[in-house]
Image: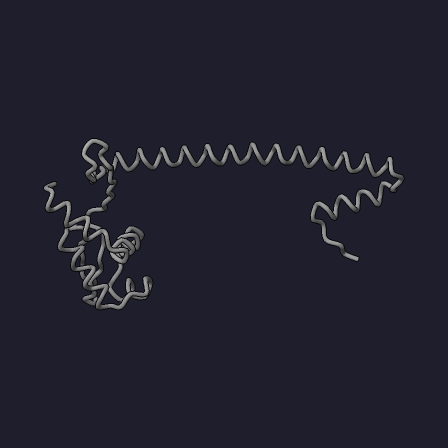
Length: 164
């Protein structure tokens, strides 16, 4: 892709509403009124955005039986921008489907790792709570409180609702 074409594409995708339209069309083809209502953008603005995206060959359309234009993603696009440390220039890279898949898999792996770490910390916290409950019950017995009173106190501290 030539620099001028790439710059134009980045300009087009720099608009938040055009990116929102692309995200919506990733779900399913839509017609102008549907896009306008779902994204709360005026129909005229939607038409202008769709025209730009169509000119850039990102979108295509088909007419239904009632002659409504249904817009769809003709070419899904994902752009990643790198800052070159040597020249301090932005280097846009258009990713292939396989590259997007690899990035998605890496993100999934990171999310699973974070979830596992949270589960480990939760398990540690549960053990700390159990230990503290045992300590409260033990201290309560030593101070002469009845076991039932201590169990109610622990339950209330643990978040149980008083139903009396």
